[in-house]
Image (cartoon, rainbow, N blue to C red; front, side, top):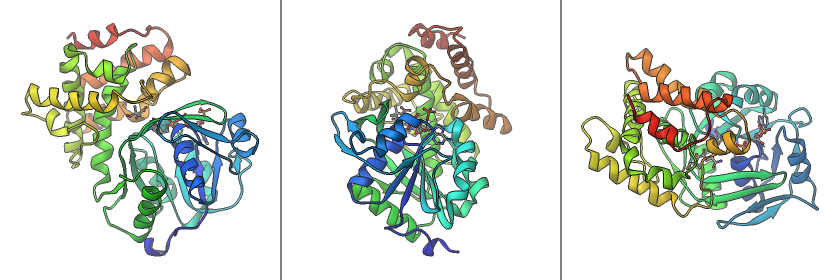
Length: 348
Ligand SMILES: NC(=O)C1=CN([C@@H]2O[C@H](COP(=O)(O)OP(=O)(O)OC[C@H]3O[C@@H](n4cnc5c(N)ncnc54)[C@H](OP(=O)(O)O)[C@@H]3O)[C@@H](O)[C@H]2O)C=CC1
Ligand SMILES: CC(C)(CO)C(=O)C(=O)O
């Protein structure tokens, strides 16, 4: 099997995890005439998507529309697919990948539309050749069965793990650029974007400790040292891994790198504020997990690895470690939501 032969346009797509991200992308593909099947563990959500009288509604200011499509729980789905889009939270990646494995065609692939280094979990299970990397920064929230709010467009980047441009990647890009995000791009350095998102993601996890939304939180002038510390730790670890982190939607890695000035960091933070300000999704998915859905966050699989990987290179990440501790306390209910949590992170 070669990548050239695998998974062409027209093959059915299996969207595994039909929440905010999977639901939004999957609905756009259905509307574009693609044969899409959804899989999710939320039985009421699955029932809504498959029911023509209810369906899946994409709400919000960006691109409201409604679709119906075949939808199943993981136990009920049948058949094999050459294109599987994995869209679960990072701490569900391993279980979901094992569950989708019997449904992945020999010459198919799994595309990870997630935050974190999920490709390092997926590839050992399905095979590196059957894994395609992806970086997503558009914004959506799952509001209930059959109801998703698409709040703001954002970067969408696709890349083979080895950086090559394959026919399947080109086909995938053409599809997503036509059906969903016209500014989607192909990159030879997907790891650069994934590590860049970890730097930005660390800031979003800190935001989730408090009341303020993303734009208002990033704009707190007294927190600039916190953004600099979190960004710098993620970037240092990425570089030690041999990855040059890449920027997107206002996040500029160079502004948080050694030698960068306070003014450079402030300019990048201002650009991130400007990007997030008009977004109908005001708070991060992490914030919603914690304070709306009252469930664990992706901290252990997405952010904690910055510090654990850093340790393998002799790089200490005190701000990331502290963030992980505070997040665990919020998850356990022993620490209340407060903007003061972020101020506390500034103290030695
Ligand atoms: N939402 C956003 O704006 C953005 C999200 N991301 C990233 O995208 C990824 C997906 O996030 P998001 O869409 O927000 O998450 P959601 O929780 O909205 O959607 C995930 C869905 O997958 C379901 N699920 C969990 N485990 C399984 C499983 N084993 N098999 C099938 N379905 C399962 C979940 O059910 P249940 O809820 O019951 O667990 C949920 O319905 C995350 O890594 C997130 O960080 C990246 C950029 C933006
Ligand atoms: C906030 C967002 C959409 C990135 O901009 C995100 O990644 C999340 O909600 O987890």
